[in-house]
Image (cartoon, rainbow, N blue to C red; front, side):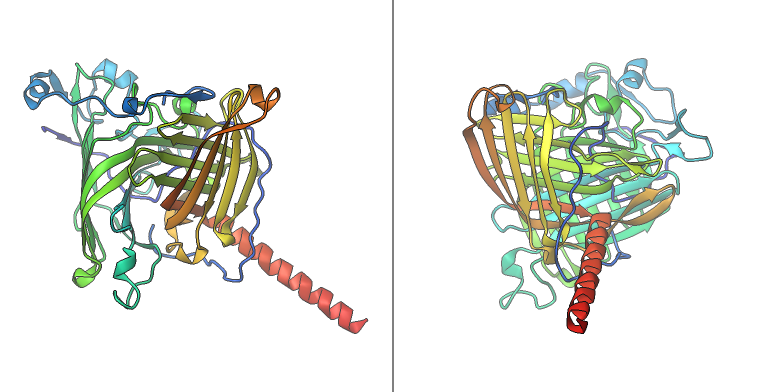
Length: 476
């Protein structure tokens, strides 16, 4: 593929990721959790055709069509483009969200504030259903600071730890990260006969590795602090099988909101290799892969993210919840989620007319999150849980202007249970009927660092209050 080097874009990586952004609605947030361990800020590393309600489709429609033969692809008319040069007008009007965005100053902000987007990042998560080994990669670019960061996450296979495995590792999720000021992008090739597909790109940073994404393939080769991950992804399962540019946020993708969230694949096929320093935890095999990205101005507050595949890859669950602070005031929680199974496909988001999210319950110190989404015809109940001891080291993200701050912690050892009910309009005229039920094991679950800190501080204050009350009781 002929590429043109992007001269001005420098790449940096931030741990950005998965936050739905749209305006308004949802109930008040509840943050609870009682655990004695404090989570101090770490210094390392670091959402179908969208419309309200539900679509029921045959499973076969979730698969992408057979790709054209190579000779047919090469016969297509191609034109190399760069964000430094003038792109074809058609491409300008419909930039694919998977592709890098050229930073520009937003008319809604003072020019001195920062470019828009100021950050952009791509996330890939792998799960080997045969060994239960998991790995993740965040490649993020902070255009405001001209820095890039790569974060590798991994959870050893159960057989690789414990008495019969390595004494240096536990069954939890680990995160290692490194930064670079020398990362560069190369744009892919624009095809006039396929204007709706991603142009693609290649990102490279000396000493860290490369990430190359095209319309139907992803190659990644990263090494961070002695940990190496190589993977080749194919056979993507798009969020929307008819229009690949559509994702969890719906119409909000057209507005310069604080954080954009796009999901490209809910369950690609991946061939991978992983190893740690001195060959530790070496693994090689076939996995399922999830691909998504974020871009915008800042990472959201109070966020929770969850993701899972079925072992047969015939079902997937994905969602996030977050809020933003505007003028010192927190917005209500904003949510988006998608569920795919042979029985039903569901998309819900806060900005869908007729959709309500309720019973939002976040217990970060207990490693639990639950929510109920209600549309005009269906209700979905989601409960995610994990041992909080399995959360990784703190992951960095751009939280305010040009600062990189501790943003979140993640585990690949979560369990997500899903129940889907069918009913008449908002359940008013008829009882709920259970039509689908599924549990996802070795799933991903992430809590914002601010949620963990808030819950820890609340626990400390509660302990102090109880101690004062005990003292008063003794004195009396």
